[in-house]
Image (cartoon, rainbow, N blue to C red; front, side):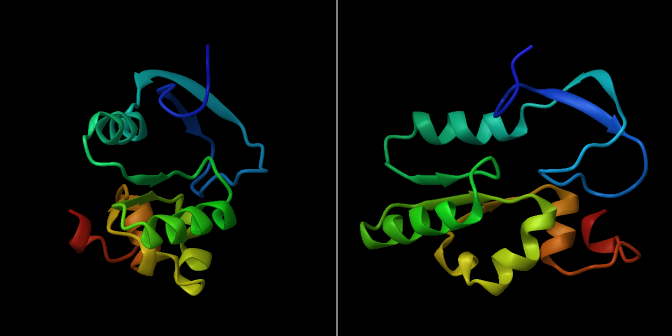
Length: 123
């Protein structure tokens, strides 16, 4: 089975914290599929307007530079982040170079700096 953007695999992790890029953790492969990021990629590739699309599979520094270049040439700037990237993305001013931000509830909570107890904004 292929992995990476759009592979659609879903895993159930043991425990209740975000899995980091360099982290290993016990998990079970689920039968359900998840193509959300692939949907974003395909939508913008089909678009007639050139756009800058940055995804978590690329290091933050590289994505920041791509967004800055896209700003210079006035391309629409689309970004997605893993929840663990929120503190750095907020502190380095990355969001100032983003027009469309694609986040799931957990990622949105991390960017909103919610501690998980107040879920009303996401329900």
